[in-house]
Image 1 (cartoon, rainbow, N blue to C red):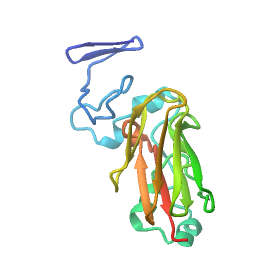
Image 2: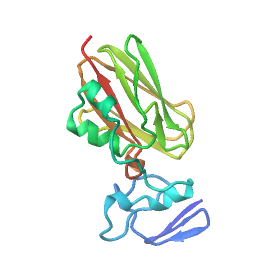
Image 3: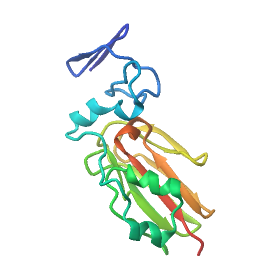
Image 4: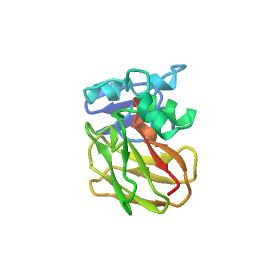
Length: 186
């Protein structure tokens, strides 16, 4: 239940009086915005804790063998370092369509996180219904899907140009819900 009274919110029986401006932690029901001057990386700690996990934590490095093998650009290497659930880049070349779960794992990941595909491959993001509202917002192209939460919702996009396409869930970016599609020349 969500009840807004001025700056106070009743969320699931707990009162929250912090800010709820758009883009604080994500403009969706159930997320608590950051207060005052907190850094964005700390903005969703409460939500992560409620789901049984804190902010995304990795060992601080991308598997160098994976990164070197693909000659990833520096921005993609850094992107993968903070990505929840990243272990390896799945080679999905040779497939015409690849399905990525939105809200996979504990509800706060894309599964698989990182994929390598050929130009002309269609990616189909399918919502699991877990983890609240999610979107697919690309940071280096105009591709994006709006916030959705219902199980079975879908978004598709066909990648025709080679490149490294990084995306995130806007409401859960601070906890590392990110992904990447690496489109390689055939």
